[in-house]
Length: 429
Ligand SMILES: *[C@@H]1O[C@H](CO)[C@@H](O)[C@H](O)[C@H]1NC(C)=O
Image (cartoon, rainbow, N blue to C red):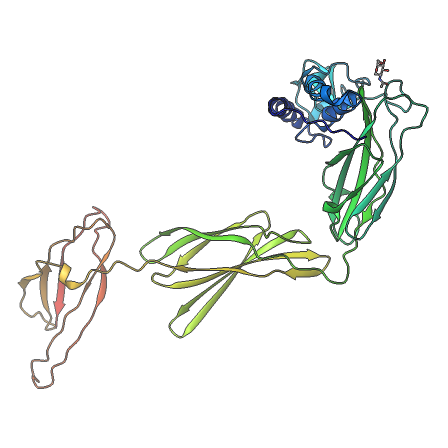
């Protein structure tokens, strides 16, 4: 009969707290064997309580998780810590007993502080601990990866043994050890083979390793399996469309232009990891449609669109691109539209008090200077133009009046005093 142990809610949350505090400390040492939660301690307690009757299991399990796990199997490494490695390692006071260290790590004192270290001296057939397993086979079962490993030799009386399975992988045509991800926990199981549907990911090289755990702990993880490639097949689906495409923070950057932030979430589905995003911007300006294209790295899912024209409708699209070798797979585009703000135009009715203050006599070039004034517009917007237009008549030919309408923008903000100038000099000819 297979029995499962369900820890009560309170135990779990208390446990998480313990785990996270040690995980942060352990992270500073920079070792890859550390995961966010302590599956090793979990597995040990599972093995310890396995033979209890069902009613006793939850109590046994929570009791085990809460007890201090001191005297973890194995010895602290000596020598190497004191000599070579201390240069690139801060001298930490990281732990006070094995209990503070993650997984099978031990609290070890050396010339440069006290830190959590992987134990040594856990050779096979150490009394009280199960043997180190060996990964026998990794195979492709069509929709899942099957991993098999060896059970401990039957003569060991290791009590109940449970297994922790870890994987690491990378995407690519060829296997490159340096590109492998850190080891990640896949599962704990009592069986000696498991199928992993979630790992049947085409185009990836996988390695697995397994640790056998009993009530006393573990002798450590097996050596990594041979790398196994999950075939990519003749057809690869491109990534799905990016999700939740959103325009935000639309604002004026100066008198002419606006800007906004376009953000999105990665596609829900992508056989291969997304390498980059393409952002397409198009806008109609009269009879023309302008297009712009930008590339954003995969780890960034936002893009600031600058120099947006006012009062325009933009069509925005984002597309995820994945790659395999030299092949590119362009996904479906997600799209949205953006309407920019119109410029605030004051019509002439809003300008009051317009009058000609002085008109001079014609000068040598027959030009007349005039001074106009009007009331300043007391709006909240501080920076704006006045547009002044006027018409003139040719005095010699009244039947054919020459009307010149010359609107021209004026910066009527005095750059020195920052005060709005509400009178200008006008040259009439
Ligand atoms: C665990 O270790 C103790 C002390 O070394 C030993 O007596 C015991 O048999 C071990 N448990 C198993 C299941 O081997």
